[in-house]
Amino acid sequence: MWFKFKKQPPIRSLIGEGTAVHGELRFSDGLRIDGEVHGDVVAVGDKPSLLVVSENARVHGKVMAGHVIINGEVVGPVHSTELLEIQPKARIVGDVRYESLEMHQGATIDGELRHRATETDKPTLKLAASNDA
Image 1 (cartoon, rainbow, N blue to C red):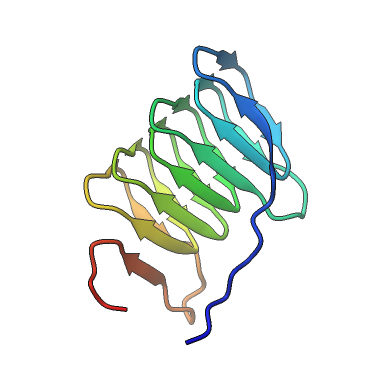
Image 2: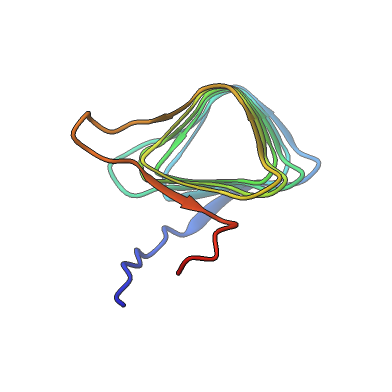
């Protein structure tokens, strides 16, 4: 079986644990958040983007990027244009839009979950607890 593996953009920026940022945060390529952000986190440009919200991280604002991995807390809407990975310790309070979704057992979403495709597209959903290959 052939799998499509896209090369991930490099993580060039880090908001470290113990750091709090207030205001809109714009980034390109990759960003990892281990601290707190009080404001929107938005990927800019036409290149693929990667946003990682780690287990102890907290974001209070809108999140927009291509590939989004969440294992911490996001209070605000989440918009992923490629793949949204919601890890076991993720807590999202806000509406979620995604192209492809991978959600692990234990993650929580308090909001609307909606596929962003047109009416003719079928959503891609992968269940992390599934035993199917």
